[in-house]
Amino acid sequence: MLHSITHQEIEKAIDYLANNMPKDTLLQIQEQLKNNDPSGLFRLGLGIKVRNLLKEEFNWNDYVLNELWGRLIIRAAKKVQD
Image (cartoon, rainbow, N blue to C red; front, side):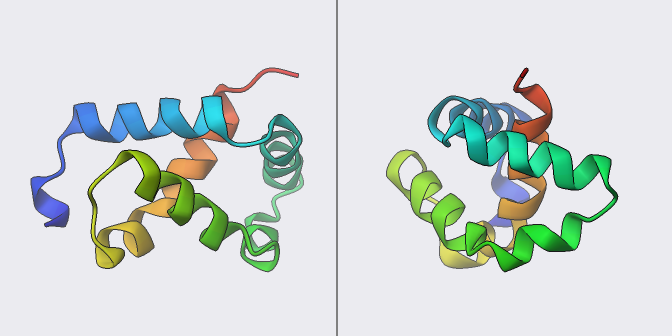
């Protein structure tokens, strides 16, 4: 199913996360990325929150969510301004 997800769906998911994740969470992710510490993302329990949020809007299976959530949230965080 991963190969069947379109570029438009990916962009929609990024926008959805940028608009629906708490801004302070996205800013914290930005800070971790600036400090070259993306591993910190995996200590926040963030993956569960992101996957659950994506499940509200997208009909993607768990495999797809597990594969994409990290890349999507990083791109969503980069879209948010202070």
